[in-house]
Image 1 (tube, helix red, strand yellow):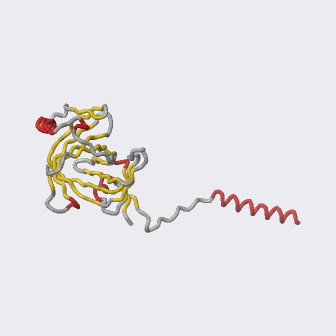
Image 2 (cartoon, rainbow, N blue to C red; image 1 turned 120 degrees about the horizontal axis):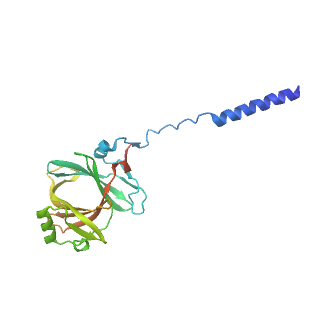
Image 3 (spheres, helix red, strand yellow; image 1 turned 45 degrees about the vertical axis):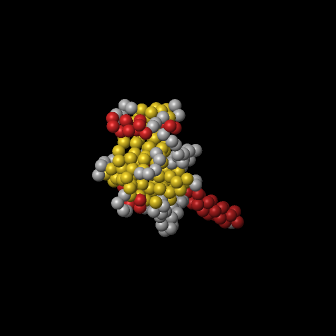
Length: 212
């Protein structure tokens, strides 16, 4: 009799243990205060607003993710096309992500804090004027032993905080045909030439988290 009771108790214990091992694990509830990832980058990147968080896979100099909170949202305009400029702080440096969605989604990131001069990239003011006049994409420059092809040059309007009449500048772009790297040269009125290293960003590498 005692043996039968003992075996029954052991059987119940075993059944309970097996049930606990194999029962489905409930999904954790999502906190209302947690940031929500925006699903469609092709739409929502252009809709990102101040306070939203942006994460870009492997975009930091050490190939870690580059994460920043948008604290500035401005706009560019050229040839009747307008696009968004999202900016924030990453590791003590200001970074920028330009989002063009017409006719297709194109992203350009300015993540490298270095400020270069025209001689650093083998350019001069006369050479830039010549490239702008010819508009020949067969032209090229060299930087750090790598070839960058002339891509475009045009006048661009900048609208800080997407308001006002805008401020004009002239921009030249050069592309590395073997990678996503770019050289961006800008001339703002009354300012010296601004030379920055930029990069083309794959939209699938970007996630936007809406601020709570």
